[in-house]
Image (cartoon, rainbow, N blue to C red; front, side, top):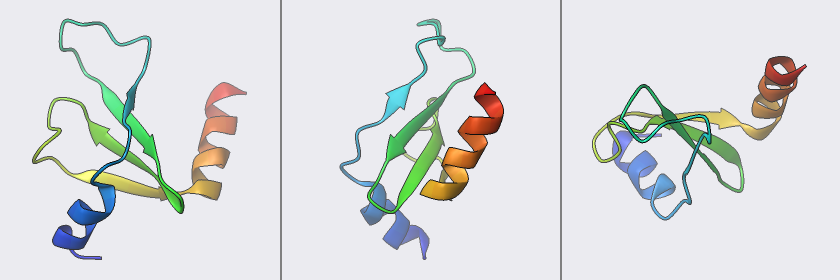
Length: 68
């Protein structure tokens, strides 16, 4: 997937920031769930920063390890 295709693919997603994130602009990530994947980005580089695409199964495994 090219950068242009990725930009089109993530457009319109609803991004969530952790409730642990403060409003002072510290290090933060945002997450959005798509139909086929979960997307992660740096909250300080929303417009022009990279977006990481993770399969839904891989994301579920990551969350299970992080929580458990």
